[in-house]
Length: 184
Image (cartoon, rainbow, N blue to C red; front, side, top):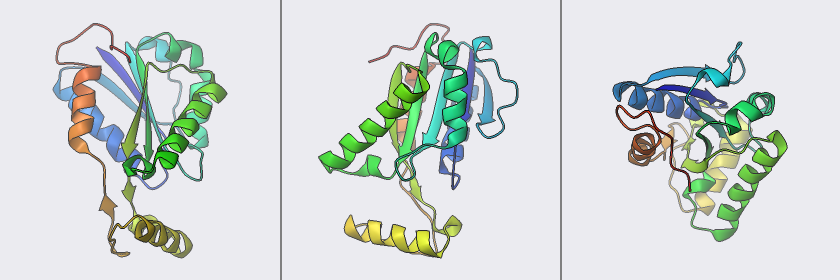
């Protein structure tokens, strides 16, 4: 099976997630093309059997490259089994308002782009202090403290659930599978 993964990232965690999925799919015998949305080249999604787009939420928005890619290829992406991975720290929250907010952000993205993914998966990201400027580091420490998360501003704190991503990969494209992805 040929799988397309296009990602948008700001501090690198979504790239790491996309590469992790690429490895899982390759290990399962699939062919994968991985592309950064800022440099997607001349990708034609219709050449693939399935597609995953992944992007991280920053101030209520996804990276412009992923928005542009999804908009430009919405028909092809909607016509195949596909998934959207929305990466955020809010995905780790147990606050119903925060969870509703990330659902709304993802829904707004799909409405704006015209793409109808078969599945939207909320993935917990990471605190990437080694990549933040002073102001963002201060802001992220404040957010962490309000949520009761202990952080070291000199070290990254990864919260991504790699086991859950492995499970997603196994369901999306099982070893040796050629069929379609069951959607919710």
